[in-house]
Image 1 (cartoon, rainbow, N blue to C red):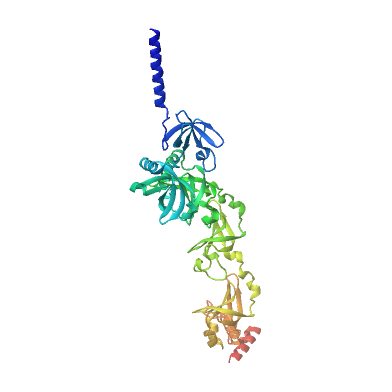
Image 2 (image 1 turned 60 degrees about the vertical axis):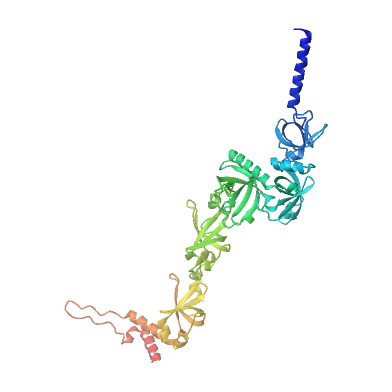
Length: 503
């Protein structure tokens, strides 16, 4: 082959190579182009990207950091960025289009659904005015965020990426949406979340909102789960705001992940308490039978009240254990949820997680000193509680009630006065008998004829039975008769004296 042919072939080969290089290069980059490049260098304030052109592109380091300021890329990573400035000496890149570009660039952004950077300038009727490429466009309040906006003013002054969702009348009517971009990002985050996370996982999150039924926690960008109030704490009496506040960083356990029925996102159940120790594991160390403690009523039932004596540890006060001083018919008439009460631990069953409590034992049994306080023969003043067919119940002290029998009222010289008594009336009576074992006190009027009646009842009870007939048909001689009171000695004398006074 001749030298000329070699030169010719060489020239042709060089030309082909040059053309191929020019074809593969991105020297014709224009503002608004979306390019995919490789991070080649990271400086203090900038990140340099190989754009495929003769000039490397540069992007502000702050655009590639997360909320904590940590850089999200490393050398060698691929990134997709927009060209916001292209000259013969530099190519400036950004995650969103911004700067001068006018209607043409906004039209292109609308057609291509590209994000455009804008600053929220002010609120207006129905939404916001947004400054974008030296123009003011409109963003409806429903499109400024992915969730309901309670305070529109908090968005004013902030800069976000928006999507142009309406471009009409040659640019005189431009509507943008931040929500469209957020929902796309959230959808991508949800897909990634489903791939990487499963139930029982422990995640870090931030409390975003509180409701009466629980707390919402963001566990990934655009991914929220809910901690039901029952999963916030072992305590039944806690309210969400008493445990966490919006903005708090928390560690949660994933309980469940499922698609919503409406197809809009995920329904994620979370728990705080399941990452805490079960309080029942130490219940045996904290409480013993006979301990007197203070607790909080958590709920009332027909059969009693449940009292929380430690976070997550509840015991039952049966209705019969609520009061010594009165008969409780409805627990809710005596206490209410949230009320603090003193209780005594009666029994603990750790296997069944049951604790029996008593309110009345914590207050003390008033009958323990009844025999010393109310001695037979003493006169006391009481308050009528209620009337019954067999007499009047009279309260002598808190928890101690005596009975004035109807038979004694009928024989009393104060019969009319006693029969006219109503609940709440004050009355003076005497203590006739105290039976602490049965918790009974028999009362009297304190009159003399009552004493005689007592002797009659006594002698009637003591009257001897007729002697049995002997086999020979003869009867035994009675030892004494109640007509002959002398047969009772001193007892007969007192009986005769009492009968004379009655006549």
